[in-house]
Length: 325
Image (cartoon, rainbow, N blue to C red):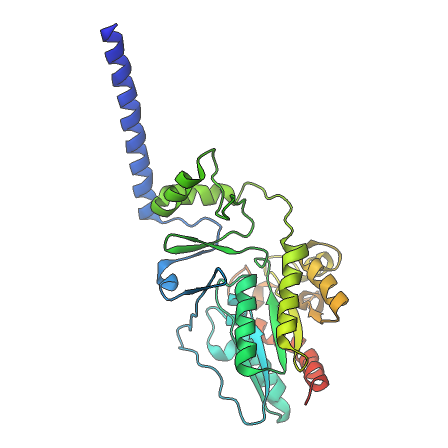
């Protein structure tokens, strides 16, 4: 009996030591290789300067050219552009962003316009709404242009020094990305904060787990746009534009947007509220997407930014004229 007990003890000890060794090896490999799951993660460098407002992380990334707000000429018609990295103009100089291209087009006839760009990389819906409300309070613009992108249905959750977007992920009762295996919530959260290997595995599996139908696009996104429209006030107007993907033909996107999908809910909201919703993909059905981007995801190059500005310009002029005071 004693010999059997010793064998069992040795075997269990070997299993424990093997498990610990494997876990340590996995942790070291993940920290060294630093793979990135298909989930938006905002790292410590940005979060160090972020503030949390209404439970959402708010940061400001100026970019390599240290972008400054435009100097508005006296009497200029002010426009506020709000969005994610698409509006911000990731990898672009300030002069090549949608906001700058739109200001150039609007002012081509000699009239004075000032287009403020408060887009920020990695912003999702609620962060855009908070930025819009702050910009409206600061500048009292004639018009607010609000970018909608397909991550607007998600939020961020604070995980240690990181902020992780939960868009498209299963979440637990506290709003964190759910554990991929049955585990006490508190233990899963501790592992998410302190273990790179566990965090990577949890996010990689969660991003492929399949998502139950969410109410975000049918309820929360329209409610958010209602708040932005209310903040714009009776002397301001709201214009919404739907950012396009650059890896799918524009004709395919435009057809899907009209009939179904997340953007379809935004188009329906605009029709109900009388708010113009611009779908650039619908105007570009014969255009090849790839030449308009700095990548194949969604980020525009200077040519793509100018094409968006060209689509927005007529509606901006019409709305600004209708709200002149």
